[in-house]
Length: 109
Image (cartoon, rainbow, N blue to C red; front, side, top):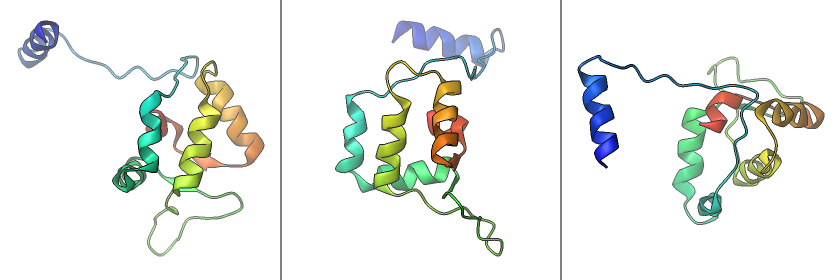
């Protein structure tokens, strides 16, 4: 907590700047909390706010300019694809093989 408080102060006084570093060579993995998707439906709703999903072979709804929402099944499948040792680039290659299009940066966050 002390470190967090110090960093918040440094950012507030513009002594340091926090940057979001997203790189395709980074390795991300799920935690045991991924199972919360099965018990808390609001998580899928929140995930859909952050991420745009387009099903394979589908197009977004041009009239509403929105992508199809992500289902619980698809969310679990995508997190399973992420795996423990895959970097983001490998994850994207797996998505291409499945012909799925998502906003990877927002999905990882």
